[in-house]
Amino acid sequence: RVPAICAESSVPDRAVRALTLDAAAILGVDDRMGSLEAGKIADVIVTTGHPCRADTRVVASFIAGEPIDLAATVHEADSTRFANRPAP
Image (cartoon, rainbow, N blue to C red; front, side, top):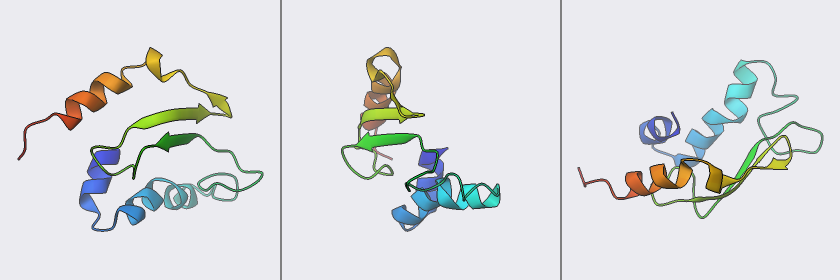
């Protein structure tokens, strides 16, 4: 879903907001999640660039404050396949 939302938005930062704070507000939970603030629940990714860019890599991920072992996922294979796709 992230690539589709990023592709539909002319402003990448608005796409990220749509996936985070705006989505939390629609669900009525923006007081507890949707942005990085003290006391809020957050799952976080650390990337090499903007999350909407095809060449961006996720270098770390945290769910409920716990680091996730990215080597144990299909993440790298999927991102490599996506980055090496033929040009349109």
